[in-house]
Length: 210
Ligand code: URA
Ligand code: SF4
View 1 (cartoon, rainbow, N blue to C red):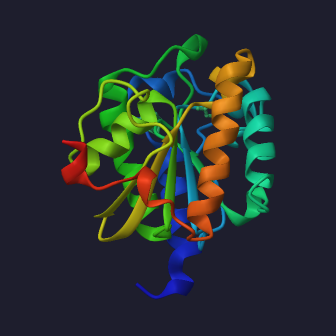
View 2: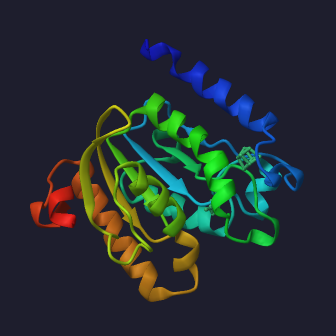
């Protein structure tokens, strides 16, 4: 695919998402939230699902958790327009409940297509659902994120080489200072990986993991 096509391909996916009725979440949405950012981003952030503010604005991570994520992205010396931000599920679950497996299954093909177009060097999964969904794609089965957060899975997936780094969801860190400290620590590690000064001790090859 010629690189100058990325904008158009991503826009076509966004249009599909806005019309999508593949799961029941379409009944409750004000706006679908396809995601936004740089089609050439080196780093992609994947959250869980839109919340109240995201649903109203049709943009990812614009509420309180989004403010924290934006600050963390800026701590990497980047702005939101340098990266790509999206979610596993593109429509808001009622009352911000967790997305169910059926909804994740219906929606995740959009995410996988976005990943394959952007081909980021690093994918940061924010929280449990995003982590489980993405690690499943590389054949790693986890129940939660505690065992994998702050690690880097250096792998070949989606047709290219990519480093997957799971961390906590910024919403979880909002009211828990300890989690916020860990999240900030993980972002310092992301910065190291992004600058390719990789600390091998924290790198997980799949053989080691199993
Ligand atoms: N939480 C998420 O997981 N995604 C958003 O877009 C906003 C809050
Ligand atoms: Fe379609 Fe995803 Fe929205 Fe469900 S959540 S209606 S699969 S875009």
